[in-house]
Structure formats: structure tokens, C-alpha cells
Length: 102
Length: 493
Image 1 (cartoon, helix red, strand yellow):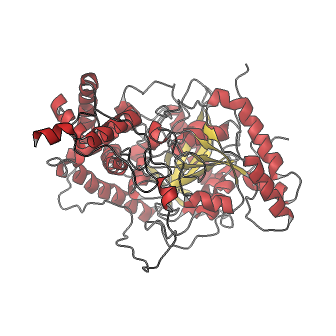
Image 2: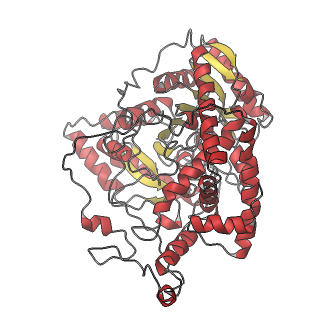
Image 3: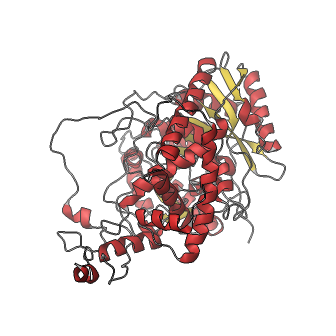
């Protein structure tokens, strides 16, 4: 299928990516080509074939619920772009605009 | 003294016998790196304190401690494996300053075995690519022809060996990322069975396909490395509990009676270049001389392997890479402060500036194929064809012990050649992705050079957990002279 720039814009917002108009256009061409390429799979009759998500037949591996050492707060926060030694810090979830409109 | 093509096992034996020290061996390779790295760019960065660690190994060996058959050997680690106290960049701006708070299990086992990490090797960004050109830190060059790609995504891992910058190298293989660069650079590379080596600390690309694998000049070094890295890990629930064989002891079995299958759809493939096909035929004759019998095998779903892979891998990647949100670690850039949600704006801006084009392309493709209305037509369909491809392998292995074929359709191609054409780049993976989809072990073995002086290679594939069979066959071919370990000298300046 052909992906329009509107399709690309929608997928980009799902993927939390932003693109310039020029990038949107080039992605729409490239992704349309790739999608056309993978559509080759439509030639294959897969009626009744069980999906294979994983090469191993391993499900719900359990272990004893025992206390084990984990990351200290300090090392967990070490790579954070912004923190206050206790929490990860992020910009406001709701901005001025959304306050104003509600 | 030339240590570049000496086997890592032999080097360790000399270190053990105190003919030379681990410090001397490490110094040797560090000075090779100092000479050659400017031409090749195999590393994202060198590890701090390599000589200090080598010295510690020397003194532990001196005190009589038994470490492992590879103790004291300098090793390079692909920058996709977490190393504590050092950066792990994944070739991405997103992780350019990331210092993991823990060590990958595979790397920890190598360190415990006394290997000395000299540096982290360059790679396609997040291991997505086949040329190492998508690295945020710039491309790696092929030591055999610096105008050409070393392959990818473990391009730095293969090039570091081909240029004589280390004795052993660790990569990762999601769709051929160990085997294809090994082939392009004229070294050996093994992708083990899915689950054979813990993925704990391997930065996730496509979790049902990713596997850590060693590269070396000599097959026996791969075996020694596997003996150290393989095994169950409580921290990776997909790691296999199967007993780890003594891979080294299993080398040297005669090949008499071995049944080797040649996949007709691979050797007759239109994209396969003559000199690569010749390498497969030559290897086939050599195997026959060694007592193996050859059978032609049909692989009806061969041509669907790449399209299947390029749905499964991007779908898993789009999910895995959602963790890069500019909050817990990685690159952050604030978005429009007046946006409805400044948090959302920050996340989108960070991801858009932190990821390069190929990573974004795959996230977009995966997000699309998993989105409402398209899931069944694309992702589910790919998972069904994945089952059929796996069944092709199972059928083949009812008749044969191993499969022989090409690793890549062509030898290394010029840098830049496929950058603007993703589909062409993806088609380069047509012989390697099958083993990942089915979770099987496969090895790339050098098989000489083209008339232009570029390495060519062949691939052997085996049923799950039959690494010993693969390694033994590759070792017999090495002993019979299929290839001689060689290092490319840097261009004269």
C-alpha cells in the first residue's frame, strides 16, 4: 500500500517522533517502498499456520520470590538527564495551553 | 613477534607459560590500534585502564591462579554490550553519554575468565544496518579496502580483527550482524543458538532474534570463547538451561559420514555473485574430500526470509526502543514549552534528535505494522511465514547434519553505495536472516579472496544447540586449508 504524508504523520505521532514536511515526504516514499517489498508475504498461503513469535517454547519462567540485591537509587538515577537525587524530573505533563483550554 | 594472527588460545598459552605477559600482549595491540585506528575507525572508544587490568591478570596468573584457557588475551567488545564504569553508546547519539550501572553477563564471564577488554567497537546505530555507516560516530572502514564497508552491524568487531587490533572480538547478530561483517573482513564469526548466551546487558534491538556471538581469526578461538560465554543466566529468562558442551574437546572429529545440504534456492540465487558461488563450490568439494556427503536441499520459503525479517525485527524494535524517552537515561532535548504537554514534546524532540535515520525508519515501519488495522495483515502474517521458514529448516535437518551456503550475495561493497536505498541494503541479508528467525546456530568461515583481493566466505548452519558440529566442521575446513588467518596492513601514509 501507498503511505501518504498524513499516514506518516499519524504513525510518527504514535512513535513519538517528529518530522519536518520534507522528512515526511521522503519517509512516505521510502516506507511505501519498504511496505510494498514486505507485501511479498501475501503470496504465501498461511491459512491455519500457527504464528511463531519466538524461537523457544519457553513460557512464564518463574523463580523463587527471594530478596536479591538490585540497583541502588544512586546508580539508577546516575544516567538521568534530570533528577533531584530522589526522583526523575520531567517537564510538566500538562502545559499552560491545556490548563487554559480546560 | 607477530601476535595479530596468532590464535588467542596460543597467545594465552604463551602468557600462561610467561613467555610474554598479558601487559605486553595488551601493549602490542594498543600500539597496533594507535597505528591503524585513524584509517579504520573500528572503535567507538578505547577502554580505560586496559594495561592495569592486564597487570592484575599477570599477577593472578603468577600466583598460580587458574583462570581460563583464554586468560590474559586482549579482547574487543561491540558497543552494544553493557560495560560497567565505561560508556556503552550503541553507535547512537541517544546513548552517547550512557554509562551502564551493570555489566552484560557475557562480558562479565569474559572478564572473570581473565580476558582484557581493550575497547568498544563501532556498529550501526542500535545494530540496525549492514554497513556500520549508520553509526552516530561515523563509519568503520574495511581494512582490506578502506573505500569499502566492513559490513555490519558488528563492522567494528570484524574490522578490529582484520586490522590486527585485537585477538578476539564479541559482536551481536540479529539478522547476520556477526556473520556478514566476518565474511566481508575475512574472519570467522559465530551466531549461536538463540538463548545459548545470555542477553542480559545486550541492548535490545529485536528480542526474539538477538544473540551475542564471537569473532576470531581461528575457529578454535570461537570454541574457547563459547565455552566461557554460553550457559543459563537467571537474569535472562530466555537463556537455555541445556548443558554447555566442552566445545574445544569436540574439535577434531573426522567429518566422514557427515551429511551436508546445499540449499538450491541459495546457490542458484540470481543475486549471488560468481566468485561467492565458486567459494561455496570449492568448500563443498573440500568437505567431500574430508569424507562428507553432499545433498541438494529445497528451501521453499527462502525468498520470503527477508520480507519476514523486515517485519518481525522492526516491530520488535519499535517496541523495545520506546524506552528511550529522555527520562531515565539517554539524550534529552526540551520541546515546545507552550505545547499542550511539555512532557510529550520533550519525549518526541529527544527521540527525533537522538535517533538517526535508519533507526527512525525501522521504528516507523514497526509502529505502522503493529498499529490498529494493520497488525493482522503485516505482523501476524510475518509470524506465520516465520513458522513456515522454521519448518523448512526442520525438514532439511531430517536429511542432513549441516547446511552449507553463502553468507552474503557479494563481497564488501563501496561505502555509500546502498545508503539511499534501504531495500537494496536489506536484500544483502537474504542468506543470514533465516537462522535468526528460526533461532539456529550459524557460522561464517573465510574461504579465500576474490580476484580484486576482497575476502569471501561461506556459511554453515546447524540444528539448535549443535554449535559443536558447526565449529568442528569449520575447524576441519581450516585445518584442510580453506583459509589462512590474515591481517590487512594499513595503507601507506
